[in-house]
Image 1: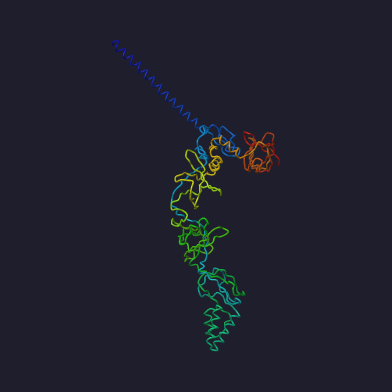
Image 2: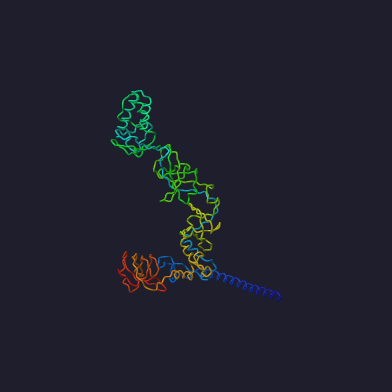
Length: 514
């Protein structure tokens, strides 16, 4: 082998060695940078510490419970850097969102086929309800119907009445017949008919020429006896209701409609009805009449519905579930395509209506909305939302309470207040200062002992309102100072406690009295 060949080989080996070292350095550097990047991201996502939701000065290095028994809230590095959220926007870590059970729903533009679900009461059809009254005074000699609910047919005997006035009228009729005076006969017969003497009894009087001491009165229609107010031997007078007879071939159902839904009800609307004692069966009917006035006590409008009842399953005073189908063409105040949200999404305070918007990336904000018609499952939104917006339908009250602290509709100066971040303790520290509480001065309050934790020298109390601090009564945990005799504390005991709140840490019990 010559010297040229040997030199070439040595040069090639040296070049390969240098290239390998350079490649290894590049790979190592890339790996190291990637490793550092992952570590940095992990550090950014790791909580710095945990604090109490209602007391930002109470800090711990691991999860746990606050003195008030609430879960501690983690604080992250990226939450300490501030942000440009709009006023009222809060930001929550995804894990907390899951733990809170936050659910959302879309704001939809849809046609409302409103179904009014309400209650109804089965009644006799007053078109066929007959009240039986006497036209003369007398005594009930025989009562043929003994109890309410008895079924009678038209012409069946109801009772036999002895009436001196009716006896005298029969005698006058026989005298007129004996004298063959047609005018007197007609007048006497008209008097008997005016006294409501049955036609069969008058025919018998004409045929037998004998006065009937007791006259049998019969049922004017087929039906069921109701309101039976007499017994044998009773003395009755004109104007007294002896009984009622109601037919049940058709019944009325009076349904009650809330005042806010009264404009949706019209004559002829289809109605379905179910009863709890007959599951699986549905009755179909229509709105027959809308009463002109509202009930002053319940603020409801009564609607009458007719139902066929040939099998007598529907009985007066039964409770029924009624659904009235209004349909698109009956919505006088709601467009056929309306912006709606689930009814549970709206927080109604009496003076303002709000919803909590889900903005994405764990951000939420309370916004004011104007609502229209309120239905069983949906609420019409007139302003404040757009189609496709996400609104919170569970855990919204907690989110709303946090967002309302600095939201647009609660703030005096919309330019000076910063947005609230539930994970940003600098922002949350304003919560206590805004409340106006001065807890540095010890105060006495009555409380009940709920639980003892002697190992930690802590106790759970339910205390009354603390006017000096502006704090309402609540249940929370307290630290018992060493100067207090812990044996004085018994579960369910009613005590007086002297409390103080240091600048940092939990509420403390300084003294105890029975």
